[in-house]
Amino acid sequence: MLKERVDAQRLAKVDSYLFRPGSYYPVAPSVFVQATPTTDRLPLAIAPENQTIAALFSCPLCRAEAFQRVTEEQLLCRQCNAAFAKKAGIWDFKEPIVTNS
Image (cartoon, rainbow, N blue to C red; front, side, top):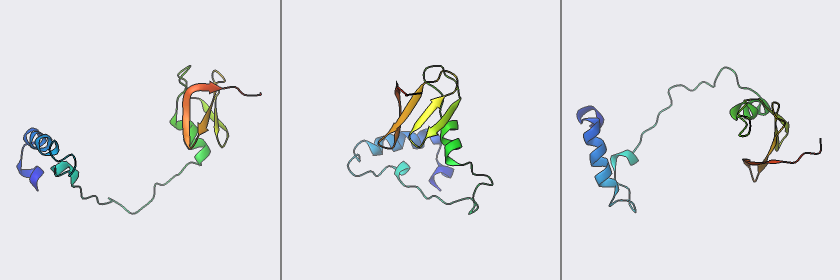
């Protein structure tokens, strides 16, 4: 209701003023959200996780979007053959791992 009656720039300015002193106790309007799903249906097609994860990333070395998931915790770039591992549940793309293949 507030967003319908107040200009967006003015509301953002008020929001920033309210958030500064309220960092310990957030009281800014942006903190209060009412979310409602638009539909209760699932997406029509869900790809298997192996394909989904590989398709999310591009290789940091050659920039190709050509990853293949070779194990549960390893992705291989089909373009430059660099391999990257998932460590503690997080994909690590800082340095390629050495593979035995």
